[in-house]
Length: 160
Length: 398
Image 1 (cartoon, rainbow over the protein chains, first blue to last red):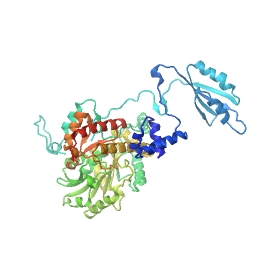
Image 2 (image 1 turned 90 degrees about the horizontal axis):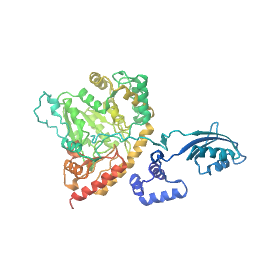
Image 3 (image 1 turned 60 degrees about the horizontal axis):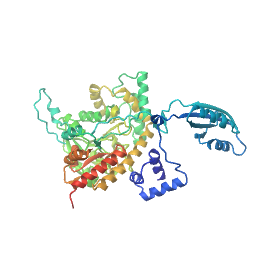
Image 4 (image 1 turned 90 degrees about the vertical axis):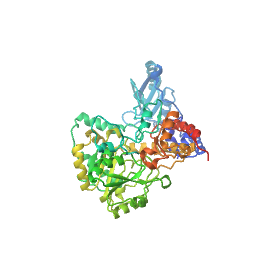
């Protein structure tokens, strides 16, 4: 039941309780209770918009940074990861398999800002061995949404 | 639907056969629709999704590789092989890919082929009323006569075996059923289908089962007619990819039937169609091999919109039978005292919402309209609120 509600909210966070109730057959009061509960236990972290910043001429620089770490005794990577994800510049932080250990998405206003973050902050954190910074040149798709286009294909007005 | 010949003295000689069928029972409504701006249409009987990308991608790749020639008349061997495997898995039916399967240009072609393959002039096929618009026309074009079995909301728009049996004559060649149904959204229960199977067996009749909406069922199970005991040998199963895989524009479907019938259908197909389009066949292979997830995601989404539509129609004050299949709701508009055509025309003019008059699908569709919920939730909600205004205005008291 909760899963059905979450799927609906994940595709459109603005779906109202009334709509969710109609879409699932779950009574409105129960929908409200389940959502409240999910917000409380942090199953739902936040409701946000996916924005195409290019449309508002707000320069943003994105960088994907791969980080190699030296694991710490007892806590592994978690405490180093925390020291990194505490920085508000980091948008996304994942522990990954492969050559590198962390994947960090950093968003800044200029490439300088990001360069500063990497050289002044990130590389100084104890346990960080090596970083590879890749600047994003173009965003095509964001969290499942195609950024440009989504041209509506017209259907025939009536098809029997 | 009217089958009266349209009278206008033309410049050219047109055959009696072509004149016999009407372009559509609701021509006036179509003209009105074409001249109205800003319409929300609940009249579009096809998915509102584009074909899942992996399916389109497979076809694009095949074009790049040069798969642009004719295929075997019956369809690509690999597709027939996959289809055979699929029908085994879905319905536990074993069809020989070399003699019992034919790839067609949609179920529409399959229907035409089977009608032409089995009918002599004057032969009859029993069909449900209301039903998809091309059933009776295909039969008439093949020289046959469609015999309607009335169905009703009270009986969940299911065909009854007794009603069918009462219409069997010495000329009856087949019973044509189409469930999940367009326009009603009805799904027939296994037990009711078994009763039809019994009648077919007793009277040695063929059953043509249009199962294009087989995958679009909600909270119930679809019964493949050919999978009923001893029915495979007397069933022509028509299926396709249009609805389940959002592939309407590809025009690709299939017929599964006893070898003798497939052979007759293939003869007609080879002279009129050669083969289904090659790129569509490649896409169909991909759909069968790995389209399951995309199809079930779409079904899950249709179901949400189905619930919104049906509840919304009932909240407006229209009685609406619970549609368990396809993507149509078929509410009764009798509280307005209008005919379904009048309702559709005035709703379009006054509130700019397009629904299809039930009368377009047969006499028993009178008093109902077809509302397709394969459209965006926002449009469904807006259409419902416009329909509420309209119904409030014309609802007869008591």
